[in-house]
Amino acid sequence: MTKRALISVSNKSGVLEFAKELEALGYEILSTGGTKKHLQENGVAVTAVDQVTNFPEILGGRVKTLNPLIHGGLLAKHDDPEHQAQMTKHGILPIEIVCVNLYPFVETISKPDVTIVDAIENIDIGGPTMLRSAAKNQKYVTVIVDSNDYLAVLAELKADGQTTLETRRRLGAKVFRHTAAYDAYISNYLTEYTGEEFPEQMTLTYELKQPLRYGENPHQKAAFYQKHLGSDFSIASAEQLHGKELSYNNIQDGNAALQIIKEFEAPAAVAVKHMNPCGVGTAPSISEAFAKAYEADSTSIFGGIIALNREVDLATAEQLAGIFLEIIIAPAFTTEALEKLSAKKNIRLLTISFSQEKRDKFNTVSVEGGLLVQEPDRFGLKNGEVKVVTDREPTEEEWAAMKLGWSVVKHVKSNAIVVTDDKMTLGVGAGQMNRVGSAKIALEQAGEKAKGAALASDAFFPMNDTVEIAAKAGITAIIQTGGSIKDQDSIDKANEYGITMVFTGVRHFKH
Image 1 (cartoon, rainbow, N blue to C red):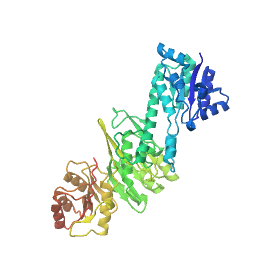
Image 2: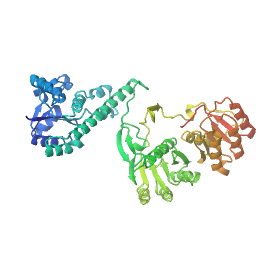
Image 3: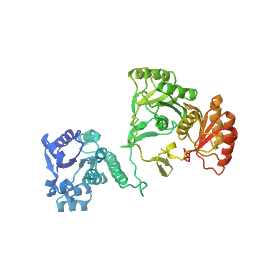
Image 4: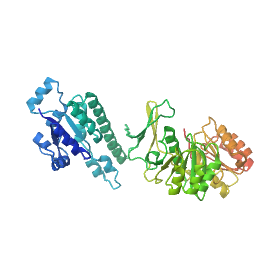
């Protein structure tokens, strides 16, 4: 009996060659629409699906393969006498190979002018149904959804006359991943369209960008997945110009650096270690900004990740080249800068779009057995109720220093304290179990530079002890959220030392 293969694809890459090879192996090719036309025009004998079903395509092509004469051929068990008897009774022939891919829904919704009508018309119904039917019957049917699998299937057919059960199982699993992702894109698009923020079920889908050598530690397996249609301002969307592959920790640190650098419009440089900033600098030029970031902590920057929000020129590249760094991220590199930095074999050079027009609506964090979902923390001073609560008003320079500190402290692990002047960070205290501990670390790092500087806290002061140690270090301006039942104690202590203090009304915890 002639074996049959059903081929219907929107992506025509390699399908003609695949169909010709199947034809040479004695398969009858069934097809529909554009695929049928493409194969026939190139010399492949094709049986139209409506010749099999004796029923024409209807409803503008919405219904063409949804028929027992097709799905009976896909779902019948080849070794079940009852199934075989029913197939004989109803004139159903088996289909051994299914090669289908789906309407380009994702490509459609990627268009800036897409309408809901266009999106819905590109939701495939017959394709997923055929794929799922064939994949369910993987014991007998070979189902292909990816053109990269054509050659492997043909090799087995030529060698043994059929594919192995192992291959059919693998391809069947791939189909269910594919259709699950396809349905996730549809459900997420329609959920967003209807305005539901936290639906009763959430299905996320990501595409493998690259396997990683290991995770946080060498004994942990890891891989990097990218969110399709996700933010362009992301490590996942970066172009790597030079250097070794990114590691798990590189990706985490690079992401942290990007979240900080996006806070700045003026030329800025950010140095990150272990997902915390160790140095941030701003200046009229990017080379000066990097010099400030380096000066902020010339020890911790060693082996760090650098993000810059301007093109890297030769002057900046010469500074960068003198330090051991893991990654440099920037919008672009001049030819001379790229040549200079590429002389360092292992350093990773990444370019990224600094456009923030397309940003992720939610952040997700996995916990064992669950997923936390929240809006990104995009609040700034303009979102709060900023007020000076002490007797003394800040000077212009103190305002600039506090604004810089506030932009950075939201990206430091809580409890977080950042000491700054108006151009750079001077000390960073991160992740301590009490706020005084973080303040001591930041002030010790700032040293003599703390005199006349500003101190930023990601949350309120539960007691006035942080103000006390800040004053003794020479801090003259403090910015914090306010909201403690003991706020007045901190205000009184600031007034005692002549410190100006600002409340923002916005908290920036980062766990």
